[in-house]
Image (cartoon, rainbow, N blue to C red):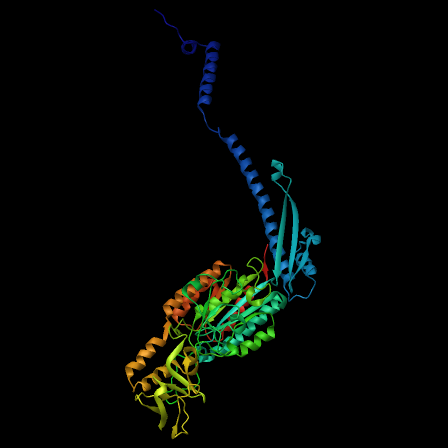
Length: 559
């Protein structure tokens, strides 16, 4: 049975058998079919068109990138020129017209065509100024045209200012005894004066308020400031406060005119915990915890450069180191609540002024002495004075009738054989009768009067003599009355008040001036950042103060 035969196979069969024209025709037909099959199987050149298409796209994208690069290059050049121009125009050392300075910068850069001269704005800022300028530019595109973007536009804006509106500074300066070494106090005075000079030169006196807080063992606020507080154990010998732990967790102080205030601050007594002269027990106090001199009182809220320089000149160094107290007072004087002290609208709110606290030390926190209860008020039980100004220590003055000279000390003969020690160094008496029956002639001193009359150690020694030279009495009295707050507690307090001040918006600069490791550590912790802390030696302190003054009043871009 015959099946279906493919026509091509039949043609090939005939091609093999036939001769002549038929054979030639069939051969040509077979070649066509062979080439056709070869063409359908050949894939070479199939991506050429796709490659050409992708090349065009890549070229277009690269071209668009070039257009954007041209735009960005011009934008950067314009912005940099604009920034330099407004900074130069703002600089108070330039005496030329600020607008002309901006135009000149663009002319020299070949970019004046882009500067909008009508939008150069000069604004007075205290004794300084603010300069604002704008530039506009349009550049044609080469490749973005293919996506219907014929040009690219740009605008740049820059504002610079120098001179501060509402600048408040608290200088917290270490005047402890160690500042007398290695010309530290001399170098500090020069640096502080140069600092204020820079502030006034760059900011202008009308816009500046400076307070100076000198600190040693304590801070003497002065009578005017202390009169704004409710006080316990008030006196007029000196004007320091004994703060408690909680006072360092917040910045403001509580003033007597505050509504519903019940806060009373403990005034530091007038006393000397260090010195003793057992040849002269009623000598004047040598080194009070709260220095009574007016030159050590806080200088608050002044914009008088001459007053500040004179004040700095009169500073002297003496006492221990209480950085925590200095920063507490400095921060409080920057707080708006201190208007109770100034009686004006200064200090302003944090929103209306820039507040800076600059604190320096050459040491670390040391002991802060204070007189504890029950030796702060009331009568002293055993310390007496007579109408001639002589002071006696004993148990019972009513039983004594006479006294005699015994070297430099006067032991009183009493019916009870109780010895009384006269504290005067007066040696002109031999044997004199003394009638103590008249109580108007002699009286018991209050504790504040005792500490203003004799040092803590001299008082303990007088008790020792009156008790028949009993050494236990001496050390007992010393332990009861010579107490202090230690350095670790004060470091914690310093950390607390620095944190509170920074949280309130105050920027703190700190200077470690030849300070030991512990002092450097607490100062670094107190500063607003690592860049706000300076570790200096010798005359480098002037460089530190100069850098701080420049940062406070720096010529800067604000937009």
